[in-house]
Image (cartoon, rainbow, N blue to C red; front, side, top):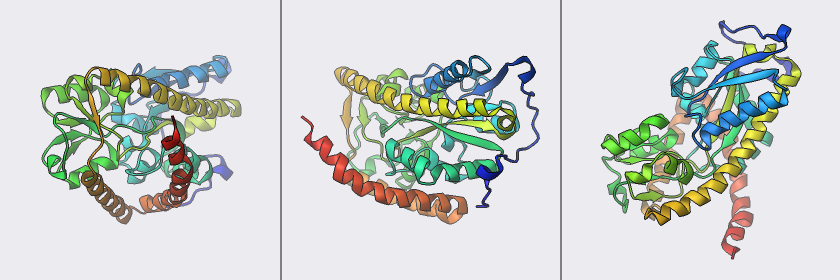
Length: 354
């Protein structure tokens, strides 16, 4: 990975793009902001809309962001491309949706058996993670901001119980990220579908199992109408990050106070997302139980097989991509410190609660 002193230079190289010049002369700037998700979807969609509302409020209307739902302006998985190319000045997504550009982006979304949401925030803010992320995105003329996290997700919905590794072999499953690569090693046909396509594919039988996010969003998308078995927790997404990305040219043209507003609005959206997911997941979990959904954990042999497969996936990606190896080294170093602290402090607290 080529080191670029972004923080010192304050500028990023960006490809030529047909960006509208800021309307500072009129005192107003409007940017297009596509998101990868339905804009009204709880948690993921509202992360974008509340972020945009905060920017408008804090700037007293000087900077407004027009939010486009996934697929409305650009394809759900094409948000970063649109911002890089200048089709939009700013975008909202999750980094691993662009992992085909660089597999290292997985670390800024989710890693199997990896960090929790709080640990991820600690690594990004204090452990060098943000600097690595900024460095990677500078190569594409993007400026990244961490804007949210779902917390621990669900492992997926299944039409029949998973009682052994053999029960996974041959099923078609919607599953994202490195977890999908691990599932493939156990015989799963893993496919990635954008949010609006998950329920129709599940209902039609095109897929046999589906992971999306967790009780809140899974209920909102109706996955409980297709399957009765939901597995918790997610091995592949102990947390999953959301992002705001800005075109570097557009960013450089903003005055300092508007840059600060974007940063602070992203921080606020991150905090709000954690509160929203924690609160509404608890309500949705009970509602789904009341409807007869059976929540289970994967059997020990399945967890062990997934852990082995995930380690292989991580090692293979590190061997194939120097950027992945560099970010993995930093990520693993903090995870090694976080694990014993979590076991010593957090786990006993949970076990002792009345």
